[in-house]
Length: 356
Image (cartoon, rainbow, N blue to C red; front, side, top):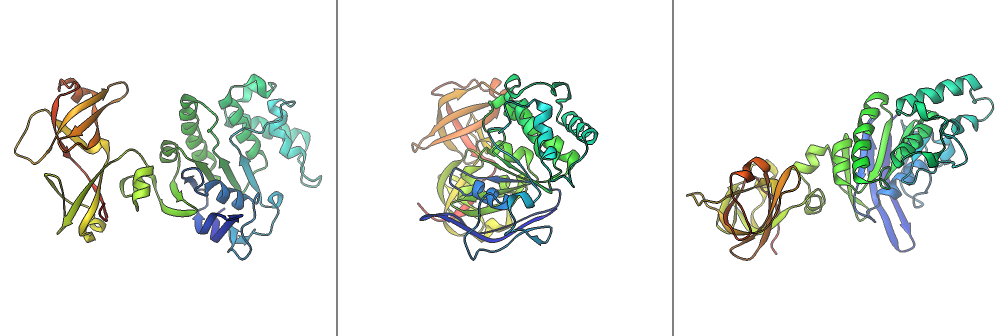
């Protein structure tokens, strides 16, 4: 079941939440709407589901080439999972999952045995089959969210919409559930759109990411595409920490401070003149000894060694702060401490046209 949104706009008073947005989600695809608060991602999700109406005169919303813009939410075949579960507290896990099946019109409603079989099948799918008799207050947050997902799947939705599904959970449970959601999607292949402001979540779970900003789509691409080839400075900044410099580009070579680096990507080679230079911390190499290669001299401000990588805060000789990430193994050989002089060389840069 593909989703096609064409030229959709939405205003709330004087605030333009969506500005001529178009998007296609392919059948069986899992797409993340990623962006900061106010970027329009939840509004777009709610319009797809029928919980909000687009502005009069907006374009179409189609599910598998059927125009659903004027259909009520109950007629779109959509399953919803929200941040705060929305489970019925007075119902058991079994009854929560069965609810959508039991309220179907009489002609479409399965029999008791079919409902029981379907519910237990779904609880096995979300790894909660042994908890069917419990109530929501007897479950952890992660378990409640899996019940909510099973309930959404019970009615066999054509489209599954998830709005910040793990936003109310702690970091460890979030990480576990996003890996679980990816495995689940690979098994059931329901066309899915989920909203998140968590970059790591989108990069790990989604087939494609739609990066949104101020009611518009900044970039659509696979996780690798949006992270390694950001289409704008906003995407570069939003998808992880980055060091920023001012420089110049001449004949496909970027120059900043004492460093010159050839630009590798073809789309970067059309840039000339003043430019902003972006370097991810993991692309910043540091050495304690000088060499003949051009490098930025800097001194160590702080060292954070807890975690899989060591984060080194640096201050260059021209008083610019930057961040480097190095492996624990490399750090163990360097004898770095606050005040140590190091020499900085970037491995990879991204450049956007424009000066200060």
